[in-house]
Amino acid sequence: MNLSDTRARASAAPPPPEPRRPAIERLVQAFLVDGLSLSHLRRISPEHLEARYEDARRRLMDGDAHEALPALAELVALNPWDARFEFAFGLALQLEGQHERAVPHYLQSLLLDPQQPGCALRLGECMERLGEHAAALEAYRRCLASASAAPADAQVLPYAQAGIERLARGAGRA
Figure 1 (cartoon, rainbow, N blue to C red):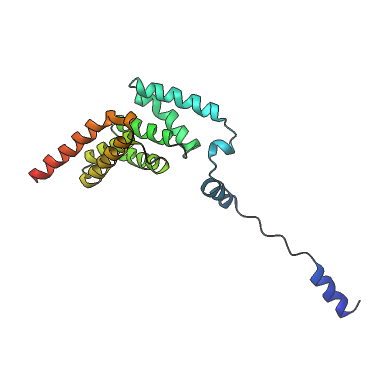
Figure 2: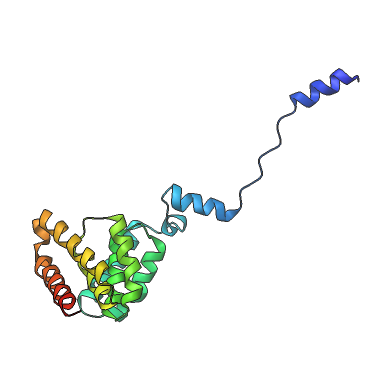
């Protein structure tokens, strides 16, 4: 074998395989780029998630936020891309007096679906309760704008307007 044969073999050899990406990088890709969720990875059916949501929602509507919290926390973990899950979890937290913990879930829900006047209203209530009056005012105004564009959501209008008026009276006293 001569030197030119060795060079020919070296240039004809396939490139070495790319190193395998760490598992965390693959998960980040799946969640953030591909839009998958833990429910996809665990092969949990949408029907199961929906049944779980309806049960938690029923408990919430029956006034039992404490009982709804575990199921809603699980739903948010399994599928953080569903605005309804985020909103319902935020609502349960708010009803339990955990306003600060509710805020990120309302924000995530609005990020996923900006046209939710009820969510904007609840965000405003939490921000007002936390003393963040500028943010509360912004949320109430967002609620008014969204509800005005959707007649089916008009029931939230008086609550948002009342929030704006409360904040205006408070500002007049300062």
